[in-house]
Image (cartoon, rainbow, N blue to C red; front, side):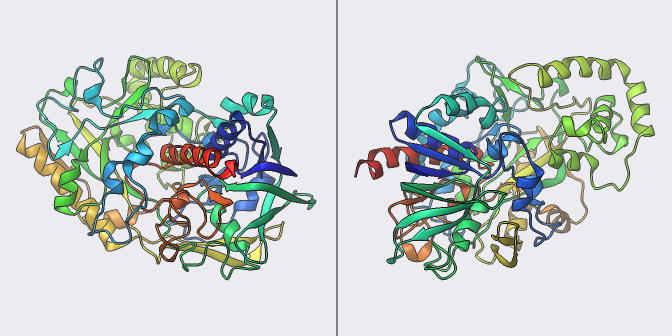
Length: 545
């Protein structure tokens, strides 16, 4: 198979690059390991037994091998990286990006268009239809901010949303059920001569093009590079010895509740909507200058529901949600495996009777929730991302979500055994450090001080040993970042500033694996911003040669 560009992987990044280039007149082959629908046989190719389940989720929960990739199971949260993430931060080692925030920010609106999440406006102060600008009254923006927000897409499942366009575009050939197993190079080791691929029936195919884009996810992209080691020790891109290293995700969890002293009905605990009907959600964050002054990692917090598995919350709505999500019959149709696992709360058995009692005691609210939320979540095209329960006592759990600092000892590598196609499996060693834990604890201290300073409330810690609690909750795997990190020079990274593998002018990566830092944001939105930037570079420079 031959084309101008071969794109490996049909998640959001792969679909965006493919359609952008095809619409510009280039012949594109879009290769997907899975099919149009989920298949356990294809999904199993990415499984590995080599990970610590206390720290990293199973790959079956984190990824999807099918048209649309992991967007088939995501919630739709759209948050860009912050200017802070691209700043020089001497207090965070190995955090220097070779590109600026301004270079990426100019793609935010195009990314919003692809996600169908409205305008690229992420500050509530610039949205006039939302009148209350702070989470609670009399809490101004200062060193602590409550005006920064996230936008929510439909959620946009790229495989469903753009399949008709992919099929109708005469310049795109979509090939699914084909897994790339090796990148071949010429004798110089600096140009790609083709990509070898196999079907599940072990039919062999060679793909050839002028340029190659790997968009097969944060870890599968790295795995393919590592497996292509005929002419490169440790795999293509391992010239610096850093391929697979600096593996990052995020650190998240709960160690405190926000207890507000303001009028309860004036607390913004749920979603706002803008003039276009886009769902918005606010969060606690820090001013850019305050981050630098206090040498803080990038971290945010948002108001959340009580743990739904604990019937002590007394809410019929939460109990109904728990029973539905944990139902062995209904649950799999309502949410992803990861969300259902969180709903179970690690309990060995399903609790039923106390939750039924909550529903009976709170029947009016429960019935209203079923009808109202059911329509907005499962029938409306723009689905409400979730639900939040009002607290009469004005006390809400505070969920934190922060960056995991770069650490070269946190890594992935290849195991000795192989999958059914002969590709070596991954070994995953995701590591958190004491500095990650310290950043979480200090952030809560500053949030607490700010609430008290403005007489709006305070934080009430729910753990007696904060360090132990943060360590216990430190886990990820859903946001796979850093294993093909971007750098100005070849000796300090895997890819250059145009996402080309150092030393190659025909091999590119469209994945969060190129990110130097993890930021506070989940990576999907920024992945697409980088994919758009890469598509522009391929169109204007590489394919013009």
